[in-house]
Image 1 (cartoon, rainbow, N blue to C red):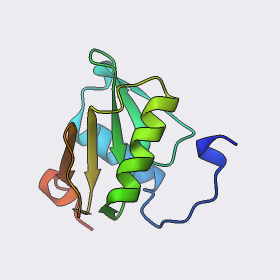
Image 2: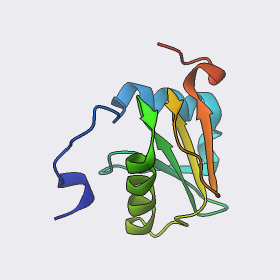
Image 3: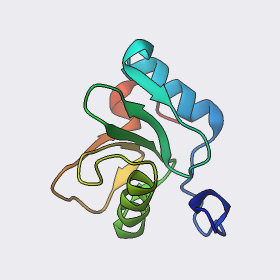
Image 4: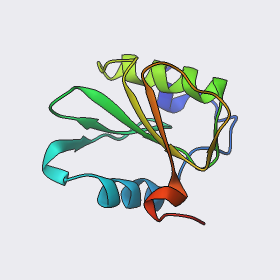
Length: 107
């Protein structure tokens, strides 16, 4: 079973609009490759082969694990994550978390 088709047990997955808003707000589109079929992973940094992850909720231990799984599945560096979300209750080496309200995307 692929990651995208696994049962969804969290409400943290972001809408397509929020995913696009993060990419448009933060990134030069020529430097990223949008990705589909993942719950958190929305794009790849072309130059550094790292993932961009967006969630509409708390970045917690289970979301960190899922982000690393999705990075591996996409052939990206699993320990170099750029994560955008509402809150974070976990931190980890190689995971850079940015609150959505810090980039002007508060609900």
